[in-house]
Image (tube, rainbow, N blue to C red):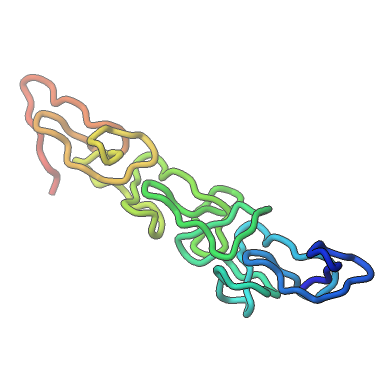
Length: 171
């Protein structure tokens, strides 16, 4: 909670009331105003679960798996990671808890719904955006190369099989 004057504004001295911090903000010791959680965190009452729309948070908790918070904003629940993306830490590496942002899946990988890390696109397939178009990064699907084309490693677009040759699968 925080101290307020009689008009509902924060009061550093001479507070007339103790008021619960608004949803998505916290105050761990009652001193000072309520603050927004840090990047990768959400407002929490127990230090393990995001508070959601509840008021009176006293701690921070790591954003749960498949969510993130860029920081400096009211955050009772962390933002869900979108399709074709993954949750990342400050260095851009996959982060399953306490992520500070989301980033498009790298070339040669895809993620259908933002759950977990991006998966490798298998040989003979290419990454697509959901409308049937090839995308180098941020793919949401791994789709078979069309008849007459191939991909040796799932990275990049499918290429045409040269005249006089045929496409084959390995193994």
